[in-house]
Image 1 (cartoon, one colour):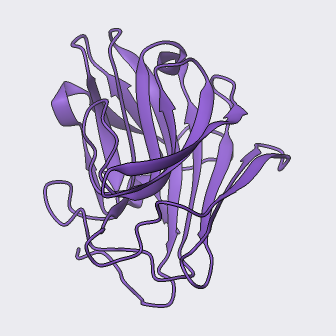
Image 2 (spheres, one colour):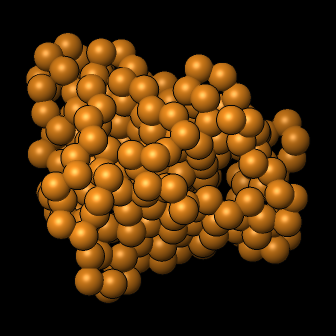
Length: 211
């Protein structure tokens, strides 16, 4: 597990900002991703070099992603957020390959998706979240990389949702991705997303990012 402030890489892409907040009770070393006055601005924190090596991994079985995060005031209207395995962090665009939680310009609804070569499988609603509350999200791949379980809990450990997806799983070497949390928005200077930590289990292959 890697605390956000010690995460391998972070970048305020397209003019947003990333700041470290050490004053959040119970969540030391939080990264706060914010938009700027310009549209479609934000940032990314990830387990690989931001500019390169986004695609070190594909599912071979046993992989796990976990994060503690808080949606901020800027999520309530025009925000795009991805948490999980993703092959890119483009503004308002889903990655070609991956498995992730996302929020997409529709208030506080958290959704899930798998993508393989741009084909996707998604669940309409995983959970409806509350601004400035903390949540834990987890993605677990089964031993044969044929099913993925998505789960989300609130700050007191209540399970809000869990769901399996068995289609469009990027499980071949042609469908690689990285591990990240990214956010962008278009409504002035506001915090979009706070991230406490990213946790990654490599699975059976031991594929780790090139640092």
